[in-house]
Image (cartoon, rainbow, N blue to C red; front, side):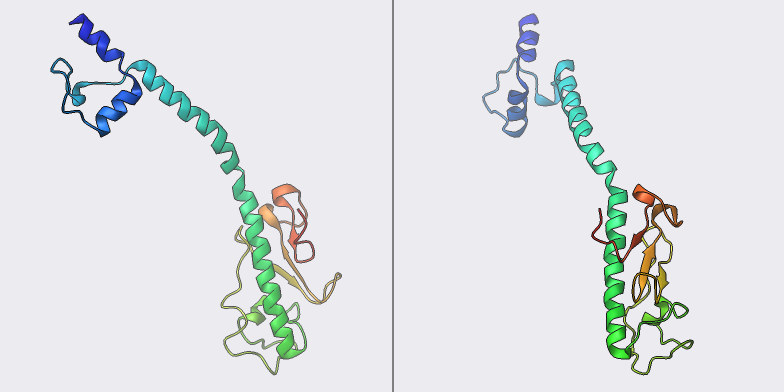
Amino acid sequence: MRTAMMKRRSISIFQRFKAFFVPSLNRPASDPPFSERGFTFIEIMVVVAILAILAALIVPKIAGRSDEARRTAAKVQIRNIEGALQLYKLDNSVYPATEQGLKALVEKPSVGTVPKNWKPGGYLSKVPNDPWGTPYKYLSPSQRGDFEIVSFGGDSEPGGEGKNADITNWDLDKD
């Protein structure tokens, strides 16, 4: 009996893998069926250690990406809004005024300079909020040019650094 136990413990993990996926018809009668065999404590600890090492390498790379993804999404949305504003200007010779806002890309403005060639159906299906759920700030004219589109970042307040830094159409290629 003791030699049978020692023989069972000396079976490697690869042999167990093979026994599970390629059952042998020539199995000795002294071997218990696979359902009665178990993994040794050492084998289980090796697997746990491997999983812990993999988790230690992968989790930090994934964890910090949500802020970066939001900043990238905001930049993409600002570029799309810029494109819609360019089309608006092509049709109407002016950009929407600040008081008309980005809503002028979805609905025909009724205040300020009412566009004569406003495209039926609009230039955007809806005005998006930034990835943090805050409406984009639109200025036209702005100090930097014809218009400015701003997302105030994660803190939804002007200024900030890192994930809270403002994103404007003038510095999309920054960072």
